[in-house]
Amino acid sequence: MSSLTPLPPDACARLSRRGVLALPALAGAGAVLSGCGVLKKGDTASSGKSSGAASPRAVATATGPHGGVVLSTEYQGAPMTVEVGPVAVKGKYTVARFHISTDSKEDVYLSQAFAQLENVGTTADVRMMSLEQSLVYVELGGNTEDLSGAVTKGAPKDAFPVFGALNDGVHSVEMLLPNMGVVVGVPVVKEAEVDFNVDDVIAKANLQGPDPGPFKLERATVSMDGSSDTKQDEKSTTVTVAGDVTFATDSDQLSTQADSVLATVVEQIKKFPSGGDLTITGHTDDVADDAHNQDLSERRAKAVSERLKKLTDLSAWKESVSGKGESSPRVPNDTDERRQINRRVEITLTPSKAAESSASPSASEAPSSATVPDPAGPVGKGPEGVDVKVGGKTMHMTIDHVVRVGGYLTGKVVLTSSEAVSMPVAPFALPGKMMEMRGLSGVWYVSSLTIHQ
Image (cartoon, one colour):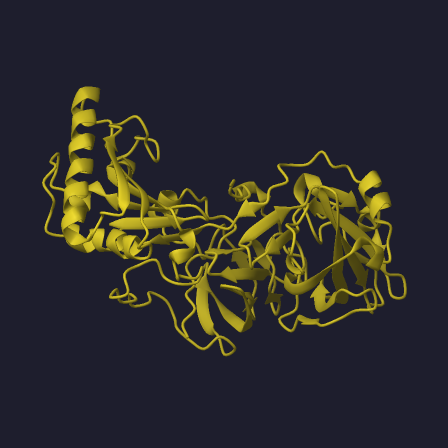
């Protein structure tokens, strides 16, 4: 399945006065939305993608007057209530209802509440999720006429985003609302049970949007020393081991560190006793000629294959060993650091019985014997938080609580400051090389936070 693409760096926006910077989080999925802008003196930060957002006290309650989940929050410094759902499936589509109200004496404009850039006045940046199935649905269009104006006290507004059809048997979904957070437990009901006209919403919606998906939430793990990384989806697991760590320079002779690196592969293999397909592929950079690189990549793949057979039982696996030389670089071969990333061996496991794996999305992909590295930044309890430095200014970061949904945890990172802070692009991303290895730009991610039990 396709993967969601991060927004570009120029998607940043300035936060308004009294604005809030929210970071809706998915732990276990490996992706947390982040934001950039300016946090004013005395402000609270709790949302990502545009001006204004959620209060640190944003709370979703069980049931609203229309049968949805009620989120009590703030936007642009004003109190706001958003009833999310219910949602109903009709043919190829799923239609949701957002009922938006405020007790503010001032008008609250909604044009950038759920989208920005060229999509202002829409719900284009909302994501519907089925975390039980590790699936994400992008918004395809909808009836969002009310979002072009302001919501006022006593005059609520409605928006009806449309998504691709949910799978059969899904009884509730999660909604990621930019600026506000993740709303869990949104009920999925029959068309006859909603108090809006589903056909009318679909007819009025401009459904010429992107690939309807759904998109699989993929999991990725990168070792601190850069020796390996693991990417897992619903069908396969690929462990990429660094050639510079696993082999001597320009050689197929395994290094003394090779066994500790290949232990990650062994750990994955042991999860699937019934076996399946095992593909081992060698890759090089572009320094030498094509023939040399092709031969070296094949020899390195074969060396990994032979060593794995000594480290674990591969009798249940159908093995394919090959080399691609310099023909399939992971990143452009334009710097020494990137050439190092391209010197690698990829081991892909496609198990015949994927359900045999007992690992949850939130479980580490590293061997169980691995130790968590010492943190490079401050450590504290979620509700109490920690102080972090951004642009030389001090900000306080908290995670009040998290909610478990399937194998995931959802929560919200809240930033507060007593002084004006200019938020840079991707202030909490992993180091550039680690992000590059995963194919992520890092702009909308808070990848450097770790949750411990």
